[in-house]
Length: 293
Image 1 (cartoon, rainbow, N blue to C red):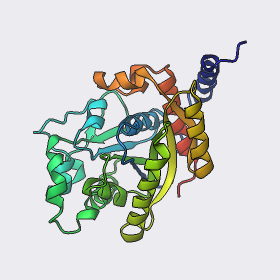
Image 2: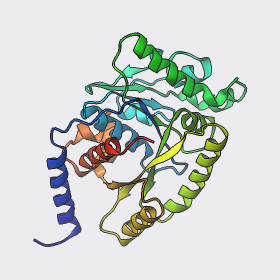
Image 3: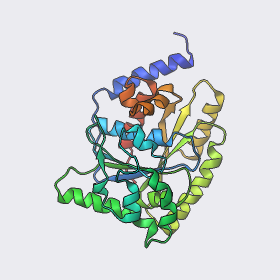
């Protein structure tokens, strides 16, 4: 059989399909709170958040997605109402509303919840400046919500995934302070490592001053085009610099991944057999078998 990028991709998809068929993911001992962050826009941050969350839920786990990006793209992809009249993360962060007041069930996806973002959140960066303990508001809200679930006899959450804006304002700082782990999606292109070093410096500042438990636990290569030498070179560089954090799974450049949000779906429900869906399921599975920091 001819050894071409297409044939290798087909063989990989077939192997993944066999490996993941009917697999139930192992639940962590305690809730893992992971912020998906990258200051560079357009790297697949929101796609990674929603599709990893959906894959974890399909694997039998209970997952909450927190949309802390005023653009609300995560809420759109999960088909969650997020117009200006909907209670959202703005009320949680600025008005101290309980998280349980804004969390919604994701349609047609058992075990998956979402706390949406609305356009109101765009003003939160300014309004948070004058508030007491402004960097800790999301961490406190998550802590209180987990306690609320315990008190009400609701199933424990296995994962909380936080999507944040492509900047280092107070919304992103809140997301990094609230989490124990950071997952960084990196586009397999030339500027990837340059942006990564800046992000890691900022994460280190957060760790030193606000959240000493924070670690970069995972790096995921996205928009990977196996036909190009550049993608292979970027992947090699990232793996050499971060051998322990970089996931083996790479996310291919995929039209299906891009199309799915316009139908209010993740790629896992939009086209479950596509390369993108299988890759995100494999990435989520890899995440669950890696030890929590």
